[in-house]
Amino acid sequence: MKKRPIIIDTDPGIDDAVAIAIALFDETLDVRLLTTVSGNVSVDKVTDNLLRLLKFWGKSVRVAKGAQKPLIQIREDASSVHGSSGMDGYEFPAVTYENLIEEHAVVALRNELLESKEKITLVPIGPLTNIALLLSTYPEVKEKIEEIILMGGSAGRGNYGVLSEFNIGFDPEAAKIVFESGLKITMAGLDVGLKALVYHEDSLEIKAQNKTGEMIYALFQKYRGGSLKTGLKMYDSTAIAYLLNKDLFETVYTHVSIETEGTYTKGATLVDLKGYLKKEPNVTVCLDIKQEEFSVWLKQALAKCV
Image (cartoon, rainbow, N blue to C red; front, side, top):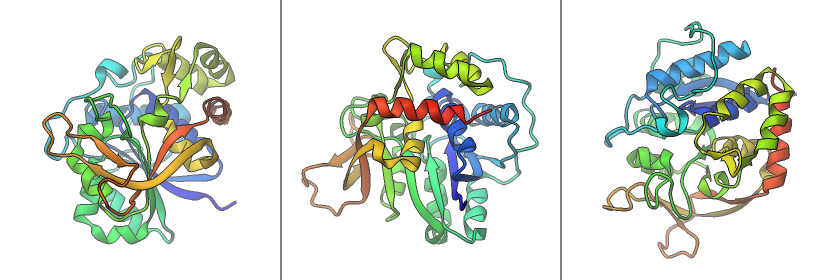
């Protein structure tokens, strides 16, 4: 079977861990590289978290550490949601660095793309700092990018600012560079993330499936992206879900602009559903998700893990 080559740019993060697990154990995906970016917690912490996950799973995928801060903004993390380490709740083995390469993530991304014989899909599930730096510094890589499927943004209200979602609001200048790149982009944002839920009964099913399920269940006990009673939000898994099962989503192809100037609206993704901006469509936006089918898909996907 021909596998689809992808690169995941991430800031683990509890919901990141779920998304990465699904991608690494899916038989149709070839995860060529994992890159880290400052977001949920510092880039050093998220890199250690990613390396711990790979060791836990026994996976040998190259990891490259990326941007330590947003392009312009002052860095603010989400440790209140994910815990001080970014993955509080499970006692992982001590971190080891055999999967970590010396190159900065932006250089590693460039090299992997240019050396690949086929186009690669980028799946950023954290702030877009690394991807913006890549496209700005090495624009020649665009020809080797199949598409970008990202978790971020919102067609409505925000979870970072009044109208800004965390990944975009964390580094809006980076997001603007990516969204204006001319590349094929799909945005899985809060509109679907807020509905991609895991409830208490789901968590028990996940726990019973395998070692990964036990680990994720433990992380869920510390995750503050909702609650097991009202539903934990699996934001990052929606990007992987779109990659693997587009039928779960209702989408619209329209223009999205990133607000970088507004006093109260900086970081907003202006999803122009009615054509007010009179600009050409540039993003496929996920507006809705089949909640029950997503829940079934998520549990089936995690059942493939060790």
